[in-house]
Length: 344
Ligand code: PHE
Image (cartoon, rainbow, N blue to C red; front, top):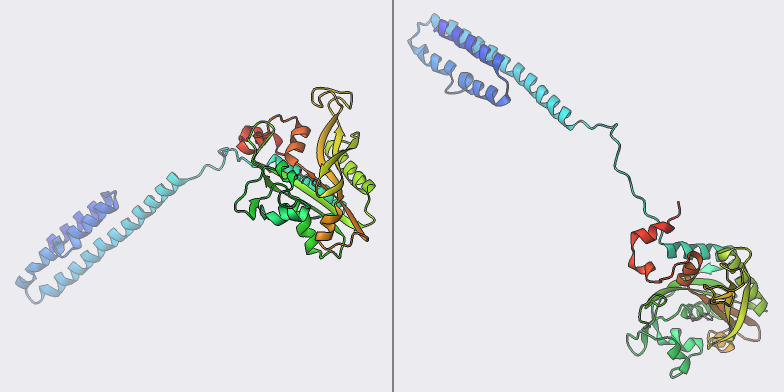
């Protein structure tokens, strides 16, 4: 029995030394130390031993068991460390590899134009306001001196939602909203950028949705020359210091007198070319002195207050500034088009 145990120990230790996987190691543990393992099997014969031999064999069996299990433990640690090492090797990251190029986005060309115009007017003391795109008939038309049935309503093909609700056709309702918010008491200096909607068939120069920037200046003694001064500043900022402006008489129900503003053509410097259709001038916005009725409806005393207003289209401004010939380019979001205008 003694020899048997010694033999078992030799055999077990040899196997543990050879083993290469944790699974095999587990099998060895079961085969030698398990409930049906070889040591247990040998010890079943203990009953036949004499009383003197029993403790000797018992002690030997314990030693053998400890030796084997110690060897297994040791080997287990070695194998586990090797497995971990292998995994780390496999997962190692080569930090010297060049990475994928990171693509940066940029503001949409219209956003850049609008922010540029905002910056200019903020610098001139204007505040930036917003108004709802779903607007009431009252603010879009009536408060702007366009009562129901007024023929000038036809100038603006309107998307009606109900009889009283519509998609705003211009940013001018924000004039009325702002003056009302100021309760007819304080001077107003505001611009309002925003989307507007018209029932147009989309083509190179028309879009059913586009942008406008409204401007409104109300104070004591505001005159046409103030309008001209501010708009000249704007034209030079947008299109270059050597630009001239001219005002032509026009008509809007909410301004009197009304004007349209042209800038001198930057392509031919006013000489006349295909861009300005031979006139030397390019139409850029509508403006005028706020109609007394509009001021009165908003609660301003027209004996004390006067004002000017203007409305421009950033889409058109961007087209002129960059020579873009199709307004649909702004809304079809072809990245090849848009990224040309990302600022570095
Ligand atoms: N709301 C006018 C339009 O959409 C533009 C405008 C604004 C004209 C303010 C005069 C004053 O055509």
